[in-house]
Length: 368
Image (cartoon, rainbow, N blue to C red):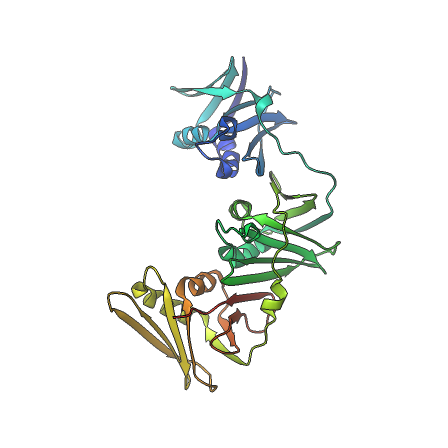
């Protein structure tokens, strides 16, 4: 009988990295399992949903090589989380069963053959490969991921466009009502490449990335993308489609601009949103004579209004937006000020950061 002797945390930390893509109920039971193996003194834990694959490694002292096995990923995670911190764990496996022991505690779990586990193989050499700090990529994703569509029949909108070109990494997302764009410089240049990452991949990648300067290496292959984060590797299929022309949208001409303090606007919108209609979620913005007014109402004839001064001397602006679309972006930004750019009330609003071209957010007005 083969066995593993480790501390609870040695298994739990990498297991939590890989279980995000696992559903408890699967049409293929093997996809509910985690594949556990050994290599060069490391324990490897691997999961997949046939679109995304996450592999996490953990160093283990005095680890003897063992035959790979699979066991329910969520069950194993729940068991390990239930054990006391620092608890010793012994896992024995033979005859299609896993026995997990910790002091006076014992669990017996069913396994499935490791040979049935569908491993996503890398397809050829990477066409582009770049590195950047994890915190930089995490920030980029936070600035645009909320704008991805969800279950749209235009399947290419259910994801995020990632472009590597001219020494920059650029990310774009849109659901057809709003579009978010962000970019960050890279330390090195490489051949231009672009891919569309599925929505689920973006969320999992964001969850794995830390607020750290430790590097993440991005490798773009044929119909695949790979992200290496020290002891964790994520491989994902990509969406094979053409993304809308975002440049035409973010470079639209604007005749009027207003510098607005982000925190002031965010707090005002959060207050007025209390009375916004659950269905329409509309907020009216009126800007005239140096006053920025925010107005909300609902079907129960309740109203909320707040105003604050801004520097603006142009023609009156009276335009309505989905309040959620404005809150999403203002929460994600950490800039002190935001720049609102309009051409007229019937066209899109562009929100940017004063003095920077690294971020643009475009949102269409509502027709009330």
